[in-house]
Length: 391
Image (cartoon, rainbow, N blue to C red; front, side, top):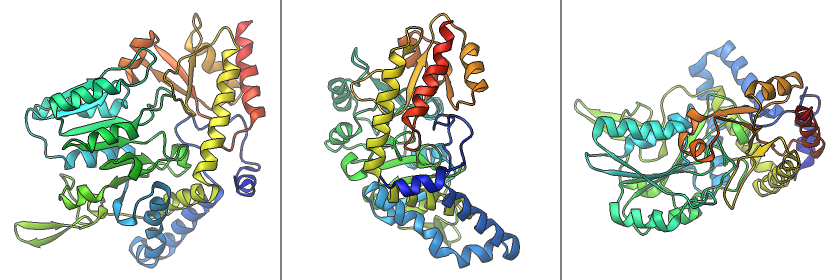
């Protein structure tokens, strides 16, 4: 791992125990500097002029994403957040009444709501593959439903927001390639902490935000679109003038590349996201993945030694989202304690993941997501803070 980069961007910034668990990780200094510089130029010259002058810099986003995810620059589109990217992909599927979406119990809350909205408006059927007793996806059931229902879309969240579970998206991709179905992967919690290779996944669409493990700015995200989807002519329902040309009074022509999924108004946040992806590439995604694995395994071990806390993550493969509760204690007991010690965390509630939380029999969970800039000493310190709840 490039420790020089880490020393440069974290020195003097943290005033507490910061994790990636509040939804937006600490941004590296080069990310902030790139956006501030761009905004200052807009102050002097105006948005259109700066966009024209900085076209090459803005285009770096697609080059860096291609390096990170093993694709080509033309396969990517900028979006305003992960859900925005996800919905643009969903809108490109020409659903008809009776079409089937096959998903899992562990998909993101907004995705489940979108599926239900499609069912309500268009009569789309939503099917969920079951889980095994250990929490893993039952791939045999998934394959059986794939063959029986012949879904138009398979949609799977790589890592749920409410759990450290890692779903077998590569194995699902192999099954999808044997069927005539579109495959959408929500990689919001995995891009930036795990190696995500779209060629290995075999997906047609993949979305993620700039914040979280990529350490980019809020209000940014991206969508990957496969060559297969582009060549089939898939395009968002509400296509923007950036994504299409108005070629006649009653006709438009979508852009041939992933840009057809973009909208107008690109600026400094795009540059910030480009810098965040470049930064991740410079540190090295394999080194990042190894470091986050080391940290989350250590954190789970430390938490497991606290008899008043209960780890909630299931599945044979887990990652750097660590969830737990404290049976018999109120949520406020934990949040007040963590806030008093400036520990960053996220609360997941039952309404965020009804299927998962009802299966676990919990109403809430605290989530920590240690990232590569965290230290072993910080993990020990936060667990020692939680240990005081026993008294």
